Length: 312
Image (cartoon, rainbow, N blue to C red):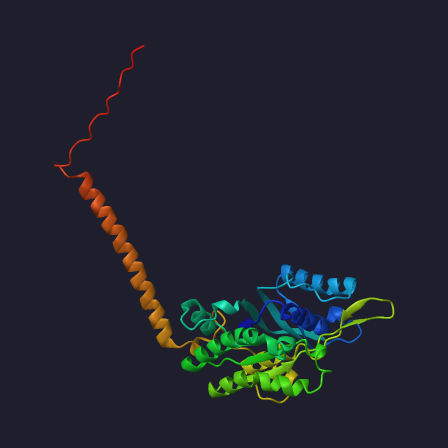
């Protein structure tokens, strides 16, 4: 099972991206054209959330509010070939708060070590706005922190930079060029850290049918996740479907055993042993003190309490 980090600010469009990818590929949504590859939810709750998003769009013709969001869940990637369906791999999606992505945060570092790739969601409307320099910094900082951990530890950790809501701004003059300029600090840093990354311009517009029913009309929405999995499987690049046809290697907690730096496993083991030993010694000391106190022959007996008599 592969573990993918999801990084992005609230309202950036992560849920719409996932629902659009699901709607674009799933056979239930394409009854007349059986897709070769699609995603399946591994739990009913995730399936219900994605279906609710699609139903919300059909009912209102609007994008869902930011409160309809996903956190951690599991997907499977399936392929239809020669009349049968195969499960190619499983992946776990971790929605990571940007404020927790700090280099000095041990939990954050462990999370990066245990993950295999990263989806970075960047709102194109925020990116091209000159008034949102602080918001841009909030986007870049978590990505740079992850890239530094990846670089320092020699991890194979591809990044998919997903530029959301591109369909809403692409008609503006020089929008693509402006986006590239605003992304330059991030891409230059990723190049410096020798990170494997690719940019994706996400377009998931809402269209209405002649009957008045609204739906997503995604354009290559599933490409980022398929690219990540293809990179992780490290298959020869002879086509996307062929790249995803070879068996995956065994994983433990989302990472190949040989990919986990052994020195960090040793450090973590030592820290856990020391922590457990310290807790044991503390408890033992308290028990010893209590035993000594209770067995002290010179400890004065407690005085009997005297009751005051009252006269009527």
